[in-house]
Length: 211
Image (cartoon, rainbow, N blue to C red; front, side):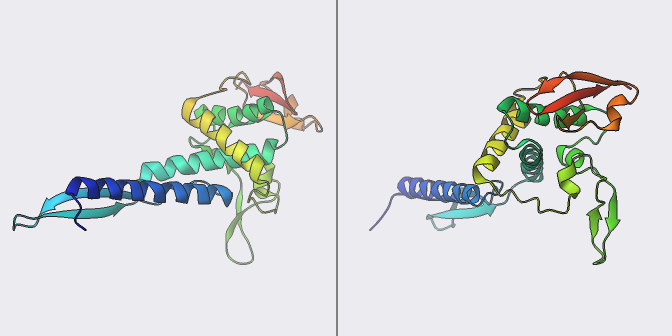
């Protein structure tokens, strides 16, 4: 059977589009961050004998794309571990604090660095690990696996992370807060100089640090 060049290109495009969709769906059901596994460049070239050839070149994700995926993933992890089960507004408020810290010169300037800010120590295996109870967000150094165990809650967290990180949705809900604590505790830092209470959203009280 002989296919025209145009038809062949259309078939190849549809095939690789379907492959990409399958990859993304598979990652979702495995509770993982969607990854850009590959791109495909289809190019028509001449072989020098009057015949056209089809060149298919796989291209991996760019450094920028990988960085953006990591940033969303880190934000989603923090939403999941810090506010899973809270109201939507409560989860959005937790995400807002992370982004406020990214914009504050006192803190690191990327989401992942903010979320994973801690004191690092070397364990008995020679690996660098976060020191217990020395993290900005407690889940990162509580000794428990960070892998999300609730698929539905994880999907909600990741979707919200995309809305906040990509579109800036729900920004400002904490009025610039850089700190928060659960309603069940009353940490000493709330009395620090310059710590200004901005409100309660969901299961947390929020504070802006006026230095």
